Length: 286
Image (cartoon, rainbow, N blue to C red; front, top):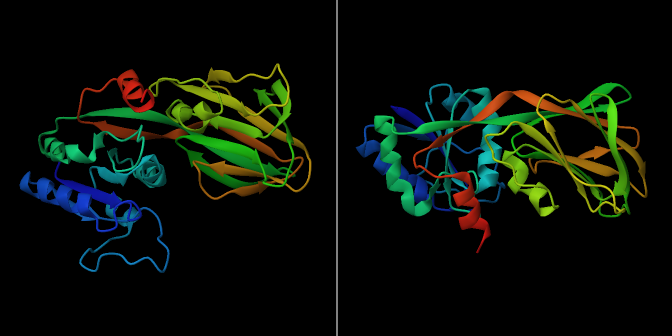
């Protein structure tokens, strides 16, 4: 590997300390790097004057790897651009849990292994999410973690039904539903009571949020299924759809959300021989 792009999260590392450290290690190993930001910062936020940043989409055209410094949210922000450019991601955790990050901040010297191609690549499935209203597509996005349909702050409950290949499987009143990939199984889905699934699996997980009955349970289906979420009665105001924790889009009674496995995938670089359930044990059993 000869050229990488680095994207730090300035809200977690205001001075880009870890990106600077990585740049020195990579340069010593014979790898050139370019620094980019994967999301816009507040106009009042002051970036270091001596750090030059380039547009991410342009920089990825020549990159062999994207190194993200932050938590899982930073990787999620960058995953869409990296996947579209077919560039693998290596995460350095300077956040909290960091399930998708390969390295902790203390392990940055291991980045030198990229120069001798001492790494493996793990491919993760993504979801294509499409919101339809009166038969028209009003919103589309791609998710690495999940798509969440949830009630607004004022709404009491929303009525949701989920169908697989046009056959209704569940219907309930509640606070919403999480539709997740195996990668996203350790995020909101798990917090809502969903199962933990190995990220290498190809499944779609549906986890109801606070269903107002005793029978409704989560469902795990094959990635070959086409999921359709229908929004029925909404008591007071409207509901919202959020993809990978991004901007919330309003959802109204009668709207449908179609979710299926995306043709795009996210590729994550591994420099260490870590097993998934070792990560679960270390990060959750504290």
